[in-house]
Image (cartoon, rainbow, N blue to C red; front, side):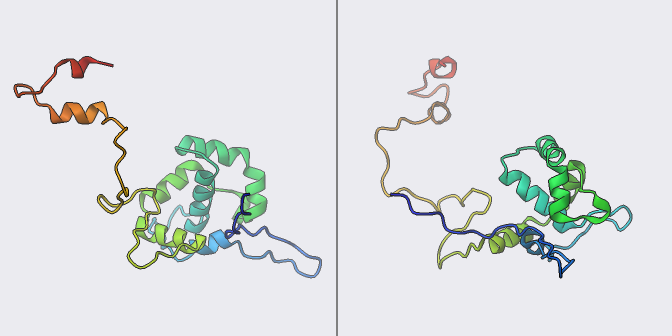
Length: 173
């Protein structure tokens, strides 16, 4: 029997009641509001928090690469404008998001993401927000003796001119 998924921080949709005309703040925007914008003052149309929120949502939706992110932004343009209510009802293009990412301090971004998702490392735990871990920090309890080494590892260990080198290993497919 599966356990129900634990609730994760969600994007709050702006809800306009009859008495209230200001939308509730969107949590993912608040997560990135402390990241400084180091772009030149002239030409800034979109806040860094909005660019990072859209980038994070596009990646979470399975988009890989800036062109895919651009397609996703165009496909959901109206919904994103309704959700985030950007100034002048415009969302940033994929090239604007790319320029923001080029100047981004990834340490600050990963801290903001960890805080948004509520990830708190335990004492002595290695935390990798980008999906990678430090070399040697992750070890299996036991090796799998049934798993043969990858051909690349075999070839790199056998040097030409030494005993044990098999030139067929280079050409076998």
